[in-house]
Image (cartoon, rainbow, N blue to C red):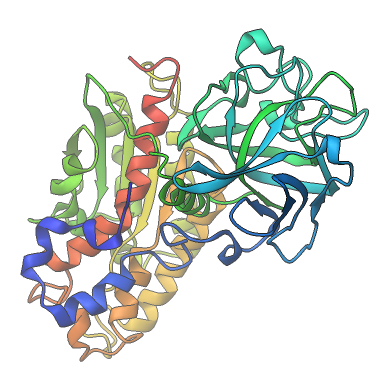
Length: 461
């Protein structure tokens, strides 16, 4: 399943010139966010990386060493031939895998400390009870396996609360780690732990002689800290593309409810909300008001948005708050976000999934004191973004920096930038179709993630 940035606004591309496309495509991804399909070593914090298509030392099919592709050089080894796993040259999408066949087959390495880990793995159906997908020595079993008959990857009773008490994903779909199932198909398993966890071998539980996982490993990737949603999604895309494992896309008999709040950037004709239904099955209610400040948005939040129990809320703001005192703006945004996160949708048990966006850069009179001098836009957008980022670790909140995408086109405040003006209407404030294509592309992946969270909720109707 290939996903390319140029597909995010395919229906709009005939309207854009080749020169403009060359400018726009790199700007489709918000500043600071990972690009789809990013290799693990391009994301900070990589501490461990085994992949079966590189660094495997084998003789007659038995693997004695598996080289760590991160800078840690923490290689997996097994010196005893009777304990060595098997190298399978064509195991998954034409690529090799390393097969662990049960006791006493395992490989060890120095302990890896991590809060984000991905494993591309397939069970062979005869795993021992309590065999670990990521093992450790006696007394430590953060990823403790379950009784084989349950078909579960982890044992909620014995695995670390830092693992089972946080969030996980199977093929991109949010999944409680305690509910992760194994079968005889390859899946992309990923774990976000609430505190640092560790593992030091593959397939064995606590050095026990009868607790071995039996299955095929294609790739293991671990990061020291927690990744944000975009980084995690980029690794999932990389693995999905490499191994042809489709990521879960939302399906629903009922369309999701999306409320789009904001100012005239959200309400204008041809705005990005018109294209929401091309990405997820949804009904969009646009409640934005031209000229609306964050204070005005806050005043309508309970009665016009939360009272309707939306599944997803998007908000785009900052252009009408450039004269708002900093502490007041901060207070209004925090109150807006906090009220949304405190609300519970009775259909899902979740708060509305929230996507916080900065408005685009306005090209109107950038070099004059009024109405929107460039320096004031930068300052306000950065202040708004800084408040947004306080909520970055919350799984119900995602952040999109549209201002950065337009600012890159505008030559960092160049009022004569043809590239910037090619994305704005004649008023040089509001995006035209090409400008909304940028916003739409920035928004597409966060919307898909939010939809998956809603549709994966155990209570979803």
